[in-house]
Length: 250
Image: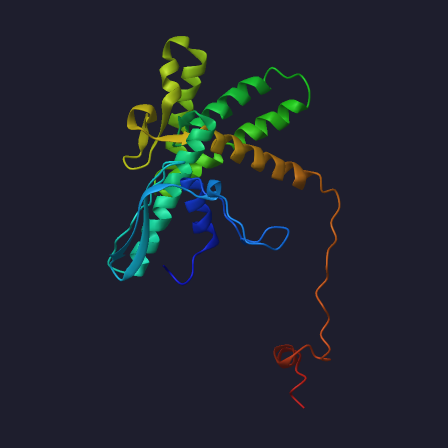
């Protein structure tokens, strides 16, 4: 057995096998007791050597199905990069399972919301119209940034994207255009549903929610305290100031 077993690994084994973690065998009276109900079950527990590491493999656990991913690489740096990629992919899958729905990526959601809010702002007869219009304009930062980072013409791409989503909202016969997003490889809009470019709905909702709350917090600030730079103790303010002032000419 390994000399050091991480607590998180111990919890995973217990969760998968149905075991209960005990910190001590002593009961309240100080006597050592043990109950078989605390044990977990697995078909096989073996020790195998993989590369330079000795690993304990727990196979076919009874309580829950679990799996481990073994990454192989030329060096530690490559393995670390693969681990981060796998972690990000698993997090995306978890978010999709949590929200149970997806939305098209490539700036499609932001463009559609921007068009909808612009049209909604025109129906307002008060000063709220300005706030809604500015919020709609701010949503275009995402597709603009995507285009700029891909070295594409953001002005042209975002304009075409907005035109597609405007057509999807005003023309019921062309609702399929709501799936249009940016193709940053070829530099043109495309149907991201057919291309398989999706984002978990919960991620998009939370990002918009957090950004809105941050903007509200900043807008609530109605006072500023300005700190003036500290005065220098030196009479001439340092060597450079002394040279310019002529204090070193004597």
